[in-house]
Image (cartoon, rainbow, N blue to C red; front, side, top):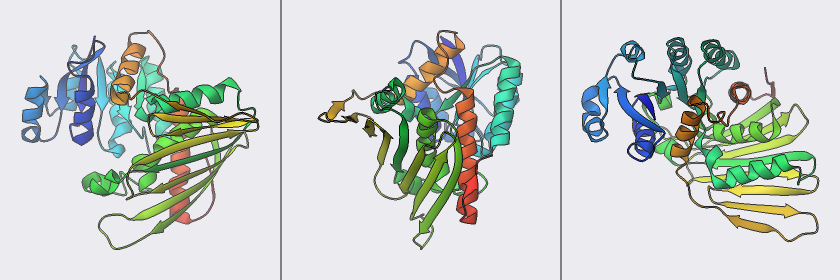
Length: 323
């Protein structure tokens, strides 16, 4: 059993805690680090969490084997580096960083310290997405040619406040908040991105964002891709990989369809899963040496590199080569 501390106990931090607390035999939270203890005291008591306001003090606590970061994006890199230097395994919510250089710094710190780095892309653990990854890797589709993805989530507007509305913490709008899940899925299937060209259409008035994103991608291996998002529409997630001999489509967490040349489509339903628990338990397995974390450090860097280029393209309106 891994004893962990969670840093940041807002809406998402609480989701992470409740996904495993009292349910998992691999990881449990014993401490939380927050800025305003009074705002989480009831939750902390219910979940048997000690409350601290001192990140450095938590790092000196020998009971803590792992640190889970559910903090604003701009804090991730320095917190990862400090936790790694203290010998703690680190699980960081997405995005790991906002630039490729910073992602590399975070990864390098964990490599130097010999600690595990996990990243919170829970959609990777959906049954539909694991099936898409399996089929794409099997060669059944033939040479990969094209990827399509869509991620819309009305909660990005519902929770558009505080640091989530800050250009410092959430540049690029929906791509940083939720679309990065599709970038991660694309990188997992097709590898590093070479070039991106983003187009955003905004619909005033403020304060709630109403906009659409269309992102055109070319990967280093010449696979093409399109990522779309409508920020305020109800939640919808789709990833579709096309090869010369067929395609595999994942829609939401539980549905996939395999289409092969000259064969009827194969529709599959996948069991619902607690994806937050699965990613935290995969992290615990990596810490205990049972299995590597499913998202490689190079994939973490490549996804942030694509994110950085996307943000630059949104700002400039031009195609941008990935660093």
